[in-house]
Image (cartoon, rainbow, N blue to C red; front, top):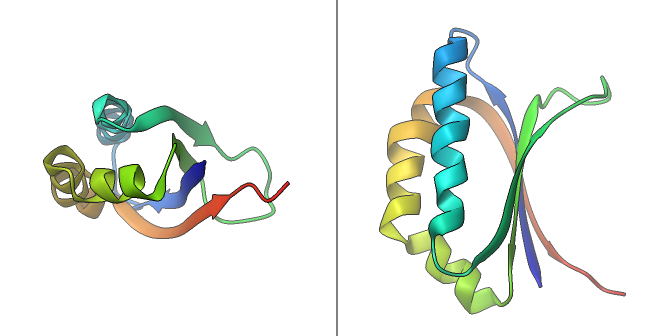
Length: 97
């Protein structure tokens, strides 16, 4: 199982309407073949500066790779992610136990 997680800060001038659109469009990524789950998260601790996160699961590396290059994902990154996100940390991992 591949866990793809991205934690982010929005640009400071992003309106609430634009934030809502971001998550609305992000949820559509779950429709891409190979995505087993997608969760949109809000940070509740002051321990880091990332406000929100997205976590997805894929059965195999090949499915994750196909998702990365899928046209819907590419459009999301170009049209929604880049205009909205100021800073992010991406972590991809597998379970070892």
